[in-house]
Length: 355
Image (cartoon, rainbow, N blue to C red; front, side, top):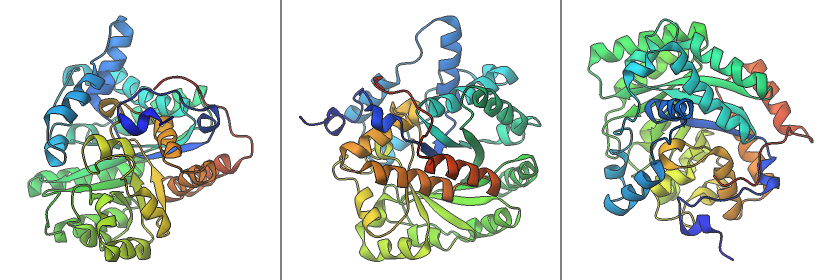
């Protein structure tokens, strides 16, 4: 029988206990502040949260694949900025995100933040560490880190404020930066990006970049970024053998988000996703969720999906190891997470529940 995941990218499935028990790592995961906070507030009030599955089905049915769908992400705000300004609400939504990953067996979750208000908040990293502390009290195997998405459509002064805030936050534990350039799907001048990346790397921050999601544009430019060790998506690297060779030669890990790529239309279907092509070229692949609330997935579901596509349990464990090695965790915490991933008796995760 054909796995329903391969027919319906938004299908709810039960995760096989063997897959559920595998240690996992998610290194491309956006905070989704309003959708995530809406879940927290709805749960407190014993009310249903926003129906993202309906939203995602409407997105796929009514919006052309590609940039048009991406432009609709983060445009619905079921929870308000006023609610998010409450430190307890802010911490609770981070806790919800980390709990979701840990419950699926994640030993590492790397969360991406965006916008000026978070990184410039004086207690930003303290609240992040408190959320991690709460979840680790229930899931001691979890390690978490925070990175910041630098959106290159800000004016020069605004971008400078955010970059300085990121460098200051590095002293409090911010682990890296994620570079997202606009224009995104057409060729751009990456020289300003290089200057910022050089400063970030010199300040001890890891560097990753969104690139190659909806076109092959900018993949080669991204590979020349100072300090870069990862690429977010890079789906279109598989469109040209020379690009595949360049990514492989760079040693960069590709942050692969199957559900996101299919729902947003970066690839027509799960069966046509180039993940296997990347693997066969020796490119390290990490499985990630990207925007799991809006796209109705979890890290456990992504591993189950890859397994349905023919990825073995050994290869799935390889994804986890790739993600941890490519993570921006401090060295000691990275070694702890690797030891957990390589343990013959990993802590059990939930299994058999539809997600």
